[in-house]
Length: 235
Ligand SMILES: NC(=O)c1ccc[n+]([C@@H]2O[C@H](COP(=O)([O-])OP(=O)(O)OC[C@H]3O[C@@H](n4cnc5c(N)ncnc54)[C@H](OP(=O)(O)O)[C@@H]3O)[C@@H](O)[C@H]2O)c1
Image (cartoon, rainbow, N blue to C red; front, top):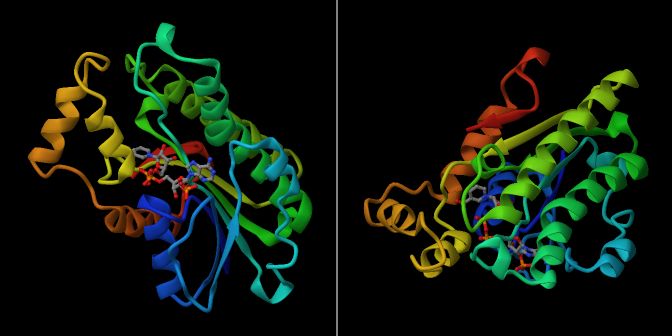
């Protein structure tokens, strides 16, 4: 198995990379920065908010047939400025949409067309409960997560139409102790009405660790998921 994981420089993506490296699998990590050194790890530097870098991205040199099957984990994500929608800039909306929506959709397309459906075992998109309900001051984040959920449902139908067996799962990981949560707690109550809830979760030690989430995701992938369960899950 070879795992192509975005956002391996911190948080959930880094924990997933370490988890699969410890299992002896190969990992390709795509992010702007890197701190993982391992014989089975290849870092590919790419700013997913930059259309040109995404267009130039090539994984062909790092994946060979003996590494098959491939698992793609679209994990990289940003929450951006936490402010009400009328206060946000065009740059905020463009970056959010590029990293959270355009890049993961394109990577699904890139991996399937480059390596073939038969060699791609599963596509996992790290989703969020924020894609299922509106949260004031997270408007564009909610929109990108909801967008990826319907994209994944559509991709799954296309795969079924073609008679292929690549699995597609969008997995919401709960509230996880990462840099993203630091940004959320740093946003302040003035701009974010749910701010205190996230401060309380941290103070009450109610956040999941990224390592725990990596284990939960892998356990989820090891179970059978009948078609009627759909594509969007929580772990
Ligand atoms: N933490 C939570 O409570 C929570 C809850 C639900 C869902 N999620 C989702 O979980 C995923 C991982 O988030 P996290 O909490 O682990 O956050 P994190 O610690 O901030 O990690 C985000 C990762 O995304 C990468 N990234 C961000 N912007 C990028 C860009 N322009 N180009 C390439 N890579 C970029 C970062 O790498 P570089 O900075 O090195 O590029 C980093 O490795 C996200 O999709 C997030 O929406 C998190």
